[in-house]
Image 1 (cartoon, rainbow, N blue to C red):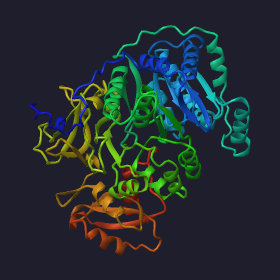
Image 2: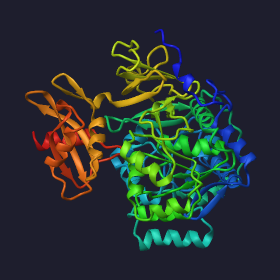
Image 3: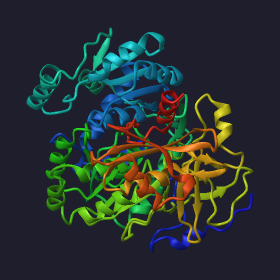
Image 4: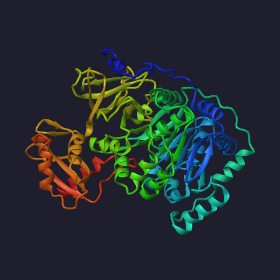
Length: 565
């Protein structure tokens, strides 16, 4: 396939190269060890008022890796599941496993027993690190898996002694956040570290082709698939991203707020790995759903960067006390990065008004480690676009036959670069659907590219609503609904319609209790052509969402079919 020239390179800010050294390190292990050596005394992670330096991360991850190697006898390439929220234990477990030559399987702690059983079974994980709060879920999943080793931890396990006892007692007995569980032969995280400290961590030969992660994706569209992300994939994406933001952020000087879960690929790469390379400090927010606690933490922190999804920024803007956060942090914030889902213009404009810093939108997907496109960090305002391909990355907009469409026309966003996964784990048929023989990854996202090389997202291919042969894009309809001051949240889906094949149904969470369907429809009619207008509007208390806040349109569609079937 002959491609147009890389027109996006003309839109690069001064100083950003078209290509980067994607093999700057043989593996993430080498990158970690280099950062720990350079920034040994600097704070790497902060959580609930406790700081872990790069030197402490080096020692603790070495001890944990030695425990996995020598005490459990795990071999290079064996899978280790990590089922933790954003705690100090997460980077220790993650880097311990990687330094031992093992493959990490990130697990959502909010999984049900059946979801957990499926992921542990598919990955054939040999060991798991789990927060006690979720051990009851593991207990339900264990009988049908081949998991051999369970390491449990409590929230305060890496806090100083007095704080540790206080937090762990409060979580278990005062707040009653740990449901009863019983699993035989578990090892506590602190005990594992103590046993590992007495053993030697054997040097494991790791190169770019070795597997770093089985990162599961697609759970909202069917059976989850494990994307095989190699050390080479991950190092490449860290280097691409670090170069992209390097003109704005300085080594050893930055503090990033990490509220999105580290088990999700966006926060894993953009926060943990990129800021590790930069020698930055990660402020880990364990429970971002506790908005008063989250805001209180932000008031105590001078932060220079924050990442999030549209939902998170929207919730913060509405939170009592956020104006005070902005006042306290005035002059410190350099970048606010949004990804993971489409950003609504209304949210972006409110954010810039409140903080003085624009939301810089990026685009990626699990299968690309994940970052593909980004807006320039010297942008003065929200662009409404996904940005341009990052260095050493190609993007093409293809039609259903795999041919490139003219500039400005809609097609499927496809990407090629060193960050693209090797394949799906044990799923050759699924792999063949998305990876073309010439290295292009089909993203399943519909979009266009403009004359400057900026990519614009339209919608997920599977979510497009076809009304009498015309395509209506849910994201556009949701954006229009969100412009109404009485709307807090909106989700659009297609429902069967006798006359038009499909029609638009809009689910809405009200900000104004007095908002009527008629008033909202009149608002939408000012911005949308007839076939895009909702035929039905249903008000809800809340909408079903993924852990990072993406609306589960498939679930809404199923509920709509069920209630009107």
